[in-house]
Image 1 (tube, one colour):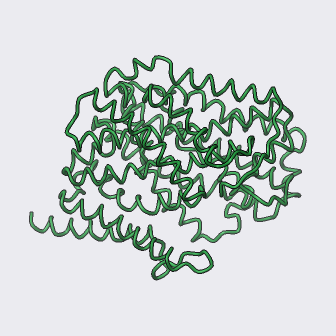
Image 2: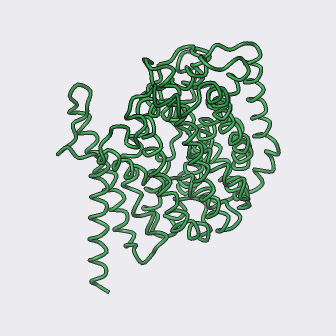
Image 3: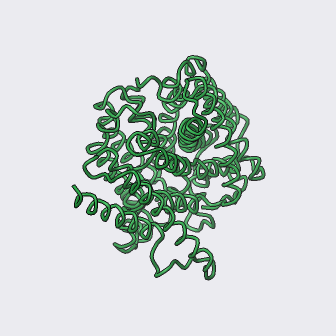
Amino acid sequence: MSSESSNILQFTTYDWALVVAYLLFLLYLGLRDSRRGRSSAEEFILGGRMLSLPGFVAALVTTWYGGILGVGEFSYMYGLANWVVFGAPYYVFALLFAFVFAKRVRSAGMYSIPDMLYHTYDRKTGFLGSVLVYFNSSPAPYVLMLAVLVQVVTAWPLWVCLVSGSAVSVLYIFLGGFRAVVRTELLQFVLMFGGFFLLLAFLVPVYGVADFLPDRLPTEHLSLTGGHSAQYILVWFFIALWTLVAPQFHQFTLSARTPTVARRGILVSVCCWFVLDGITTLSGLYARALLPDLAQASMAYPLLAEEILPPVAKALFFIGMLATVLSTTDGLTFIASLTLGRDVIAKWTGRSDDRAINRYTQYGVLCTAALSICVALLFPSVIELWYIIGTLFIPALLFPLSTAYYPRFAVSPTWTFRVMLSGFLVSFLAFLAGVLNSIDGQAQYPLGVEPMYAGLGMAFLLHFSAMLVERSRE
């Protein structure tokens, strides 16, 4: 999905009033009691570790489901396969995280993923992990998607949309920290579900489902594979490994009131994602049935709303899409800022007092927002950004982080550093080689192997070899 867009949604004065009211209320929620949120580092970073089940579910569901225009594009093009590709693999690994990692993550009592790496291994491994986690937490894809949504209703230049779209979340995250994120996510949760239920309320009674869609859709749209091969579907299960190293899962688990709240929260979240995938996929099917010749499939939802919804309802649906993207943007911005401020700058300077950590994290908010805008301008494609981030950083982090919670499978800090560095370098060099040898815009990777597979293979080989060597010496 590229950033090229135009003024697709035509708003009335009442529509604009609703959007402005939403943004103002969002700022109010984010800035309320902002001074309390900065009282200590634990309060600013983790909300005092008092996140309840409703807050946990709202925060995790919204921050892990931000690619709404990409979902619209895929469901428009491939139908029910959207549920299989962007749903099922992530449910599997989210459940794995709930039953295998959640209790250990919460009981560890750390502040972040890098904190666990510093604690388990050594300073150089923790520092390298911090840098990798920072880029893995990048909100750049969602900053870009947010800008595209702003363009949909304004047709402003991309850079103006990037700056204006980022400004709202930056303000309340800078001042309110973790509590500001959680308070706003509760609102976003209601709006993201409400927007699509509203859209379907205008579609289902008029057109029906069983009697309408099968007659208007290509046959493969109603198959679970969407015409794709089993190998293509399997690839997405590897990409979904992202779940196990996702900063959102770790950060909110660390913030949960108890390990039980974290585990139950993830289980409830999976149920919520299942429902959300269902209503967004169904909306994409209606878009394909009613607007079969779209030139830009990523605009399926906005164009369907323009075609079907009256004023006010159109604005409410747009706010639902905006909430879906903005919730992920602010969640990742905060986590990336925390990583840069506490786990990179504070460790580098040797300052660990609450005041310094809070201040460095605030600096991180500004740096992260600026860097995300620059990256979005450099790579104006959400799908490309997703691919680059997943390809480069999953192989480097998967084994060191997983074994940090299961020490019997861990290797020494020296070997862990090598595993982490090699996983990244092999993925990066394979990716770079493919890009430099592109043919007609298609990257030609060495031996035809995806860079992420090469990186994962190298990381596994080194880690397993290190285990054999170290066990043989015991």
